[in-house]
Image (tube, rainbow, N blue to C red):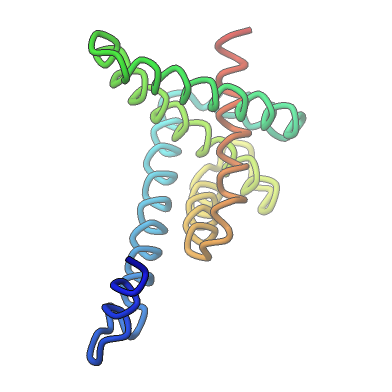
Amino acid sequence: MIGTVSSIVLQPGFDPDPNGIDVAVNLGSSAGSAFLTTLVVGAIMVALAPDYTRRMMDTVREDAVGSFGYGLVLLVGLVVVTVLLAVTIIGIVLAIPLALVASLVWAVGAAIGYLAIAERLVKPDPDEWLVPLLIAAALNGLLVLTGVGGIVSFAIGAAGFGAVLRDWLD
């Protein structure tokens, strides 16, 4: 088996992606998606619930480590429950909506986490949201674009996710 794989790879003319274009396209599209998600979800949050958004941003800033830990534990728990539900025939009906709601809450939490960081960076007027929103979206996109920044992006998202869920569950 190993000889077969190496002979395919070492064949003359076999070059799956000589310039790394696929990697660049994947990173670019992921970064663009992260940018747009943060921008759109953040804009919706600011437009519909500015006081709640501000309160959650304060929670993330005041207890970032606690929010991160809470978010990480709940995320792992949600993944385990979703997988267990998906394994059963009847549970898959619950697993799909649970995964969709968890993804939506993650997007809200991540936007809140990035807004908290962006607001700390630019220190705008209390009612000014446009600049922090653009900076938050740019930060998320740039972190995802670096590849390694995905870990930092995950941590910020987990902190926001934890703050949102702690508020709902407590």
